[in-house]
Image 1 (cartoon, rainbow, N blue to C red):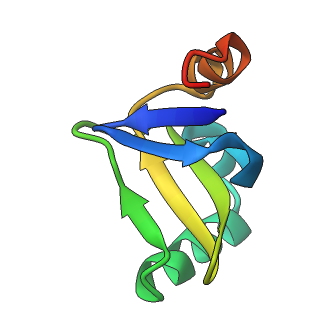
Image 2 (tube, rainbow, N blue to C red):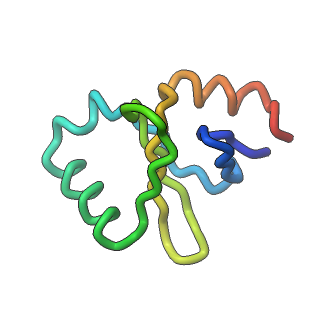
Length: 86
C-alpha cells in the first residue's frame, strides 16, 4: 500500500515511521532542531504548495526522510486506512 502525501508524491506505507501535526510538535525545541537538521542534511522534502500542516517521517535506503505536507495528519491517516493506493 502507498500513501499519497500531496503533489503527486507517494511513499510505501510500510516505510512510514510516523505522521505528526506541525502545530502541536513544533512547540518543542527538539522537534524544531530535528527538522532543521533534516533540512541541512538534505533529508527534508517539502511537498506542500501552501503552509504545511504535517510532517511524515519515513525510512529510506539512505536512512530517513522527512516530508512536509499540506494535508492534516487526520487526512493522511484516513488515506492510509482506506487502502486507496493498493
